[in-house]
Structures are given as C-alpha cells and as structure tokens.
Length: 156
View 1 (cartoon, one colour):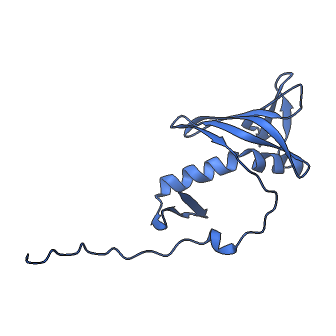
View 2: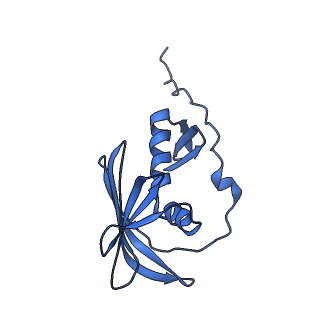
View 3: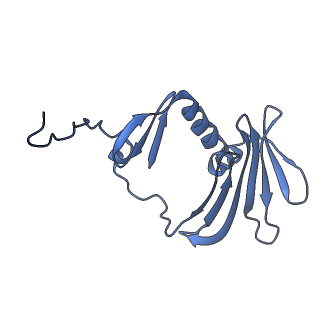
C-alpha cells in the first residue's frame, strides 16, 4: 500500500489501484506526519521549536506554548528511545530500538507505533541514506478502468 497527501488532497494505492482518500484520512495522515520524529527534530535543529526538560530523560518539544511531543532519551546512548504525543486523534507513541550505523548515522531499525487506533511494529531490513529515486514513485497511479465480467457462452 502507498499513500500520498498533497495539501488537502490525498490518495491511497493498493496493487496499483488508486482511490481518493477522505478528508478525515488526509487530516489524520497530515497529523501523523507533523508529529514524526524527523520533522520535529528538523524543526528543533532549525531553532523553530523550544525545548524544556521534563525530567532527567525527557524533553518536551513545544510550539507556541503547546507541547507537541515528549521525547524520551536513552541515557546510555543519548539516542531517542521514544516519542509520545497527545492529539485530536488520541495518544500516539513511537518506541525506537535496534540502532545501527548507516553512512555515519544512527538509524533505528525497529519502530513500535501505537496511535489509539492500531499498533504496528516496523522492522527495517535495509536503510539507504539519500538514494537516487525516480520522481515517478511519487506520482499518483493512473486510474484503471473497471472491466465488466466476461459473459458465459450460451447465456443471455
């Protein structure tokens, strides 16, 4: 399955068959993407998000006085151990583990996600940093015409 969101429009493609996503699905996907660790950390690195220590192992990432998420740090490695946030869709958490070196970066090869709707465990087999990708991978697949079932001989 592949899902794309561009502004207010979005689509889901399963086995090459694309369907328009509902506004609720698009809003949920945008909310999840806004809370993703890399997005938050990028904004943090750019100085766009103030940080407050919540405890010896936790940092609160804030925006305009609103807590966007709490980042739990592993004291032994200094790496992100978990990210938690509360939103309109409920509580969301991600736990990061099995860090490995990839092109000089520490990458979590296991991510456990809980979002109040479903739980998932993502295990990466391979990670590439900045691979060359065909731009067509990001295009919405063409709609396939629905074909009528073939009629059986001798029947009308």
